[in-house]
Image (cartoon, rainbow, N blue to C red):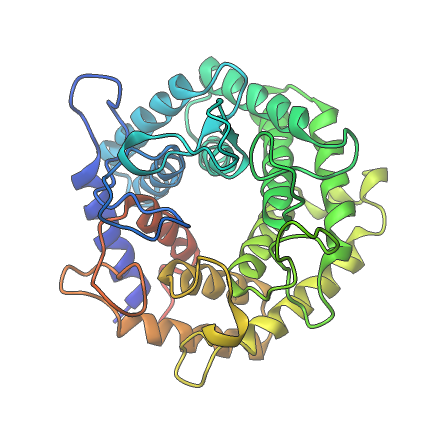
Length: 380
């Protein structure tokens, strides 16, 4: 049995069930019954329509629809992208939506706080769908251009290659910078290829982010949550989740910018060897975080609020498969077998590898669909 294909089919059916077509401001989006977001750690605090969830879900439905020549799925995906384009803040970013439709306020200022991560998942979905045949409407062009300018506006200090987690965040977090890197590269390439609109500052911003962040990898291959040297946050902690996430963003950047094009970018000079070495080290670190049964070794390797999340298993599987090599692939297969044994009676994976069974968290299920889709015909 093709386990990945079966899981993807069940997630797709779940997303079709929760897409919201009631008249009103959420038409075309996706309802998440369990609107968990760390550090709340409370799946029962009230659901939400996540912007990031819509970005991933729409891309997932678009890809499945294209693969199966299913016009209903592609129509649904386009409706979701239309909702996202209309939902964009005037400054170009997106709010991170938590429980009960409430935007995040990580710094407790009570002010508007647009999110790098939320915006990046929207850009990933929209940009990749446009490159895979989504009709190139003007509102999508405007959305991507505004998002790119917003990313550049939050780079702090300007020209540093540091892109914070959200507006007014004082911290240098590796995942936020690499989400920005991927987004800026994808926006540049999508505007160039689909709209014949070259905006070089987006590509330059991506290169600055890579140059700043690559040296922050630990010797053991871990990409920590944040840069060393900031006493306000515990940056010294190991993390499986954010190592996989940084590597995922980096691999996505390489996928979207062809090697022949990268070799012609002066600002890219010297990156290829360093990226390859970093990916190899990250793969080694991740393999050492998986036991012989495919379970993640959380206790000594994860101190973030992502601990115990199945989402982390799925993205780690994805990056090990894509990085390649016999050891990485063998470890990825163990992870997949572990996940196959975790499926619930609904066919969906639970959100955590222990405790109460929770499945209806739409943005997590949407991301799992994206992490698995490239391997949909893979046999364990």
